[in-house]
Length: 393
View 1 (cartoon, rainbow, N blue to C red):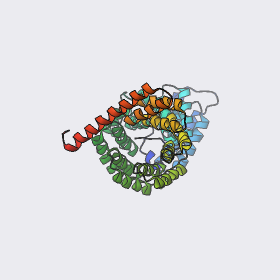
View 2 (spheres, rainbow, N blue to C red):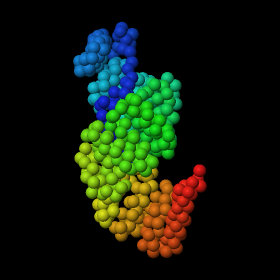
View 3 (cartoon, helix red, strand yellow):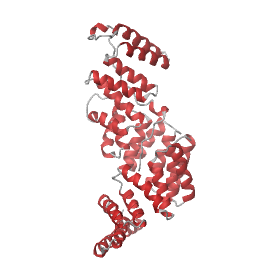
View 4 (tube, rainbow, N blue to C red):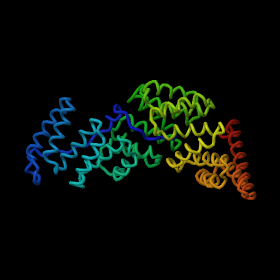
């Protein structure tokens, strides 16, 4: 399954805890720097803590900002500022504060936690993964920080790496909907449908009726090729969160698989209206264009998809087909050769490669590719017949 990372919704983000460090009550305990009023900063930080405890988040943030201005060289204060900003949804500001803390004291683990969490929440999945990767197997890591790394790796299609990290985070007490959904997603990516269903049960307890729960339900049905149930779940996700571009894209994807191209195009365009950067909505629109004979339009979306997911064999296969339809046999061969390296058992990719080689004037290589496609098709039919007849049990 494709899992692009878009901006998270605020309601789901509260499940990811923020790290903070203690600010000394006696500022003289820390070294003084010129133009730094740590006594004032400590007093303001104490007021900020009291405001936060009383539920006055805006006041707490304002006081912490003022404290940071009073002592800009005080690293622990910058860590707490990063946490406050992140809780307020100011992820860019949180990243700035966390980096400032690390510039002052690179050993502050709490600053790295907050940096990684803020990067993840802002949609910078690669940055979050890089920041948090050192804590994959470390001890004494907060479970929500470990969960954040697992979420990032799942969205980067590193499911095998993400699974043990997510399982440990959840075992240690992380129950955020994002972590549970990522666990289900990672299980789907590694073809563990039973594991995905177990994650879904936990998610149903944590977030019953939420869009993220319906999305995982749909993903599991889609992985089982139960497209009517997947459609029902994705429609429920779109109803639960009308602003979810992913829900509309998922609807379009299922409609495409059922060859309902007009409905699919409508939902995919709606998904792009909600998230113009959704490469995979563009991808399925490109496939529709390819089916309708518009290879030029299809190639644009497929090029973007190949750049986004270079390990996806089906993307290279479809791009090769589009290039072949445009008459560029050499470019088609390049894409299709990559497809068959990534997915040697894809009969369709071998067949398209045969067409491209034939078009390029390489008849012997084309015959070999066609023969490979025929062999794979026979193997697939035999396996299907064995399954249907019960011989596989």
